[in-house]
Image (cartoon, rainbow, N blue to C red; front, side, top):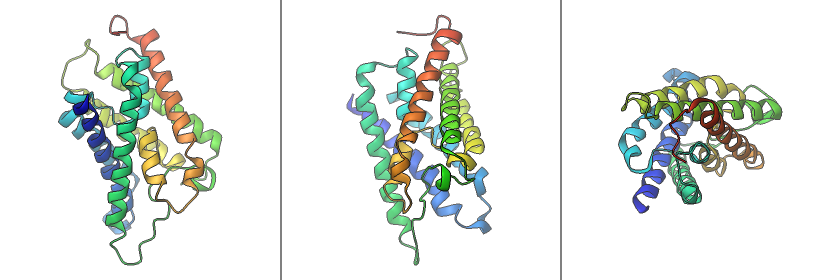
Length: 232
């Protein structure tokens, strides 16, 4: 179990450091041309690369909502759920701390939103709490269906990280204007600790909605799509 938790911690660290780092360090400079699309691609690449690097050790969740959805879908042990969550949150907080230490090395740096998630005044496009809740549930459910489907024994092995990374890229392309895209409570928690906004006060939604979406995706897969593929 120790190796699995270490893999989850490092994989989540990489996701937050790479994905949120692209927003904090690169997207802050329009002349670099990274924009929303670049940030979306960065998040997808973090998951793709870590899924290949350590996915064979821990399963490559890097996200409490994914762990929950996999448990609901019969692919993950319920007894390991809380330890995975703890490792994922620690990885996210360590990554956000490192990112803050680097970003603050620039003269005049202010954290601002620090790649955090939000609704209302904290939404990049000014979307409501209801809109944020709905999009996070739908996209996290869809993400779980992609994960469960691409890792099914019914499909060719070895390509799942590509499908999962592209799915996360797509999710960010859709949701960045609405919530700055969470679908991952650990990712939301790490950066919210350093934001100068009210991100911590809205963090509840970015736990509740992804977890609900993850469970929904697991249920949809298990009862409508899986056939003989579930293990529990």
